[in-house]
Amino acid sequence: MATKKAAAATGTDQKHSIPNAVRPAAASGDDLFDSLGEDGTTTVKEVGKKGDRPDVPIPPAVIEAYKRFIGAAVLREIVGKRAELSEAEVDRAVFDLWVEALHKNGTQPANPSLKLDKDGAPGRKDLEALFQVQDKFTKNNIHLPDPNPGETLQAATIRLLVELGLPQDKAEAFVTREVDMKPTKSLKSFNELKFGHYEGEGKKQWVDATPAEQAVADKLMAFVAALPPEERKLVLVTQPKVDVKKGAIGRIPAYCSHLSHVKAIFKVFEPVHFVSKAKLGISDTPAERVERLSDIAKEIIGTSDVVTK
Image (cartoon, rainbow, N blue to C red; front, side, top):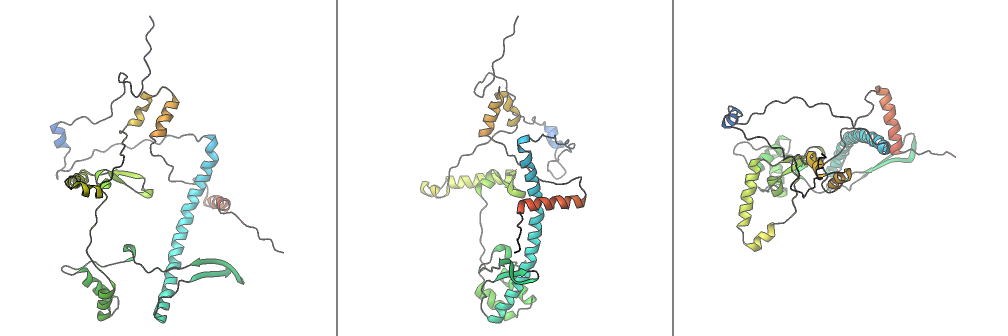
């Protein structure tokens, strides 16, 4: 007797068998107590090391793109670091000269250009850059001291200036006349408190909001809800929030009878994916790696042949 073939499962068919979302089993009272450390915090059980990542074959159509990406990514890292260190050295030296001109002339100097002639060929320009000093000060380049107990930030700043060699009266005059010190407070983004935030290199690593942060977010929302309607309109914005349940990727095949179905889902709900931590010449000697990087650099940066008449 022939068996009846089961109908293909679909996302709207409630009769198919789809694995439930994976959730940890409820812990017993003893388990809950056992999981707590001496200070009441939850202990984390050690888990074994993850296995080696599986190798995925690179599609032939993208092999050349993959090679270009790896070469460019590694070269970018090397060149970027060199540029960062060299720029800092030049910036400090030229800023010192700019400060000398400021003192000598008694007025803010114009921002200069930095030019360099070709080696051994005076008058033939080779390199040029601009040096800019802007009349603004950000929190990243203001280095205030930590006040001593009972000392105000203003007094601590004056003290630091005096320690650095500025006369007391001059330090007091500058801080009083030229620096505003007002205690200000700001609020963390509500969405960051309620849901979480991205962090790490490239801001690609998602970190969920902690229960404490979510509790504060709930209090803020309760406060906003108590405002008059016209005031709520000033602070509330409505944005779509879409969550895909954990483990959904592993359950997608239960909804799909063809590969095209899977692709269709991922066209709408695409998981995060990216290539990172590029390496080059892992088995090469240092000399071979330098030669390869040189060839890649020539390809990316390009060369120009000067024809001498």
